[in-house]
Amino acid sequence: MEQKNSNRKIFLTGGTGYMGSRLLSLLIERGHEVRALTREASLQKLPAGCEPVIGEALKQNSYTEQVRGCDTFVHMIGVSHPSPAKAQEFRRVDFTSVQVAVPAAVDAGVRHFIYVSVAHPAPIMQAYWKVHVECEAIIRDSKLNAMILRPWYVLGPGHRWPYVLLPMYWIFERVPGTRETARRLGMVTLDQMLHALMQAVEHPADGFRIVPAQEIRRST
Image (cartoon, rainbow, N blue to C red; front, side):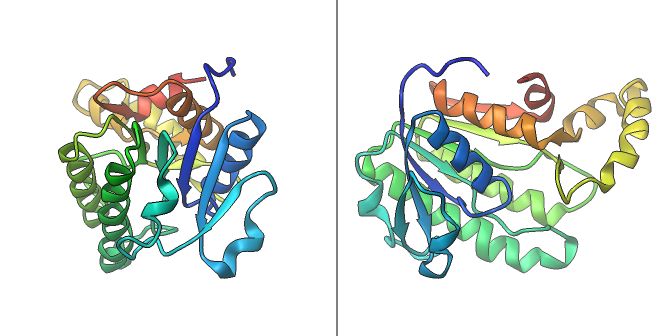
């Protein structure tokens, strides 16, 4: 990974999650200052080197004051192990957390907002990706400089079963009628996601920028 441009002051939500915990450790390793939102019960999950912020991701104004002084906001709150049965949870957690995070970032004067969304449109998991479309609209309407990462499925420890689908993706990407969909909904690795997120942190967007799955795969 190339050397960072400069140290950032980052506010991170979802820092105890599957991807967020790994990103948090990398950010600290790279010398960035990180304030990580957490509930008191999860405080022990945060690594040394970050500043814990006790708050509620789904409660308005729960942490706005603690965002002040940060130049970058990385939002990674979301329902774990998404499935069609969790449609109500997507709205309660994913959507509500963005409704809280974006005003907090705007009010605190954050210069760059990074959001992990999901690739869309897709023929399945419609409740999931449609909520993320609404979340992206909230970010776009805020006029924040923002970078939106759109993976479909992230391959990594504990998330390896879709590897069996890779030969099918290879075929679909070579058929004109399915090529665009296969590329948009292509799988990325955890390392590729972390690299893309670090690139987003260290090379802020000017305006509103989408990073699709195929670009995430090329990031390494």
